[in-house]
Image (tube, rainbow, N blue to C red; front, side, top):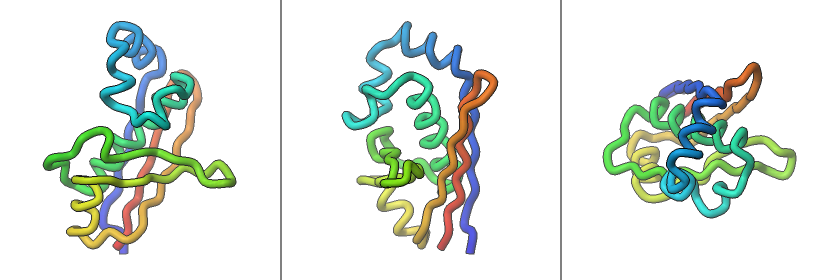
Length: 116
């Protein structure tokens, strides 16, 4: 059963400017494993984290580092969840999270579907 759906879009040029103006943004938003990726990939991961929050329907106590976007052996994206996000998904009965990320025409988009 689908519990929630979330989508987010990030303008790549605007994201690049934001990271240029505020270099600490990388450390604030991304885990150590994520932050050295190219800006295009970071924009996609930022969109993924935003889309996940929308899909689970609750951001109480959530920190950016509570969600890490990872790739499996085939390059498919997914999440590793920690702390508040892990607790929220467990309390809402979420058993599976689907993530798709794409980049085109100067934007990054992420789509998340959560199932119970």
